[in-house]
Length: 75
Image 1 (cartoon, rainbow, N blue to C red):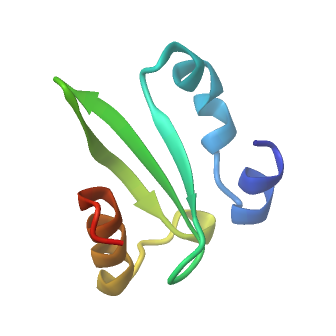
Image 2 (cartoon, rainbow, N blue to C red; image 1 turned 30 degrees about the vertical axis):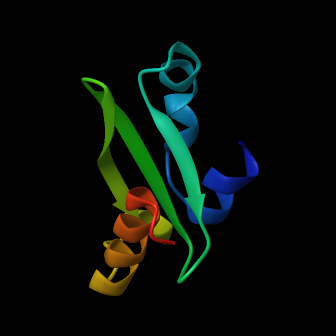
């Protein structure tokens, strides 16, 4: 997990303890562009907490839509 935060220039490595406890799930998004996705539990489901590009930049709408489709199972 150490390389991804360095490559993305973000602080996702600081979430490691939360991830180990199951309080957050972290994913690397590589298509349609590189981004970091964090999900948090919401009852019996998981919801998007953050979706950020390199240096914590906002991602464009097409990336948000691609992640939404992936989470919905629509690839």
